[in-house]
Amino acid sequence: MVRKGLILCGLLGGLSAGAYAQEQHVDVVVDPMIAALQAFRAEHEINPATRPTVSLADKKVVDKRNMRRVRTRGFRVQIFSGANRTDAVSVQNGFLRQFSDMAAYINYEEPNFRVKVGDFRTRTEANNFMRKIRGQYSNVFVFVEDIWVWQ
Image (cartoon, rainbow, N blue to C red):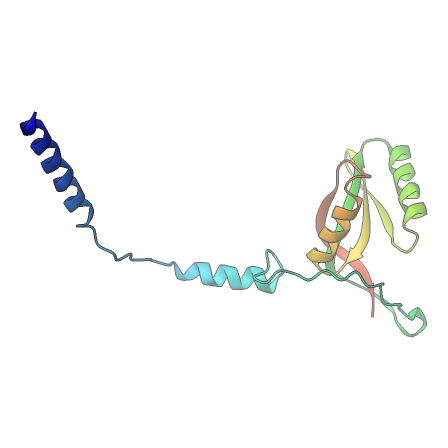
């Protein structure tokens, strides 16, 4: 019995000594392309490095008499996609009744009609609006495309 106890203590002692023999040093190898990719994504607001702030203030009023509409690259939110033109027009009209200050566009890309809304300059704005209307429309997505803005 004493012999089994000594063997067990010896085994446990040997295992614990082996556990402390590991080094406390970790080498981290970083690919330089990761930093370049992170900088690119932050510059183009794709998963920005800093969390965006959301403002709940009213939109600024645009004096359209002294400005002109120009086409630029931006974002739109798709709220409908289907083969029936009547359904697309119905969704567009319903949206315009609810959000009269925002534009809604119907595009036909064979075989579907698509209703896209808004002219957002940043993905953050488009994502915030998408979250706002997600419960009202079933297929809501953000797309990059040419938009109309006032300058």
